[in-house]
Amino acid sequence: MASTHSSSPPVVAGWREWVRLPGLGVGPVKAKLDTGARTSALHAFDLAHFERGGETWVRFSVHPWQRSAEDAVYVECPVHDRRTVRSSTGHTQERFVVLTELELLGRTVTTEVTLTRRDEMGFRMLVGREALRQGFLVDSGHSYLGGRPPRKVRRKNRGVATGVPRGPA
Image 1 (cartoon, rainbow, N blue to C red):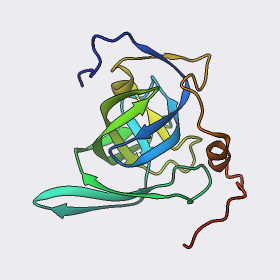
Image 2 (image 1 turned 60 degrees about the horizontal axis):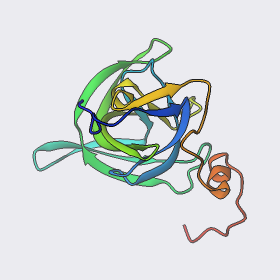
Image 3 (image 1 turned 180 degrees about the vertical axis):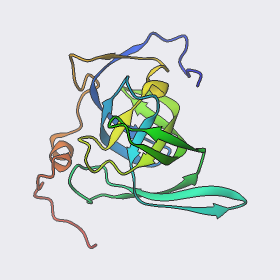
Image 4 (image 1 turned 60 degrees about the vertical axis):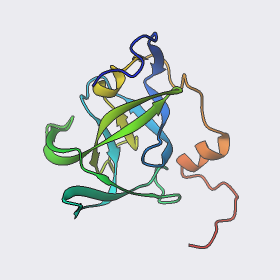
């Protein structure tokens, strides 16, 4: 994928950052920046594909907070591709791939994201090399160089009650 900021100097990011997926209505979500992974991956629940206008689409939900289904985001979008992905444990899995915008450290790029269950993983999102090569350098000695969301958001991500009454279900 070509960089949307090819003339801009690279942005230095930590090994974990808060990201948004504005095209999917998702964010902020804590992500691990992984130069060992080619493609980015998003933790998607209730994944189902269907036909719309002669094209394959996918419907899924994203739970942005670790260990919580609160504030789930429901998404429908066209399938960009289907491909077999080998996980870090060596298992292969066929995954749907969607094309979406990724906002990281104030820079927005378009990238491919595979959809999978990441229940056993510590992060809801993994940002891979295809996204990172669009103007980012990863400093593995630092975290959250783009700053952190407000404390209330971070507490929700850890599954800590915020003391804010919940609305009707």
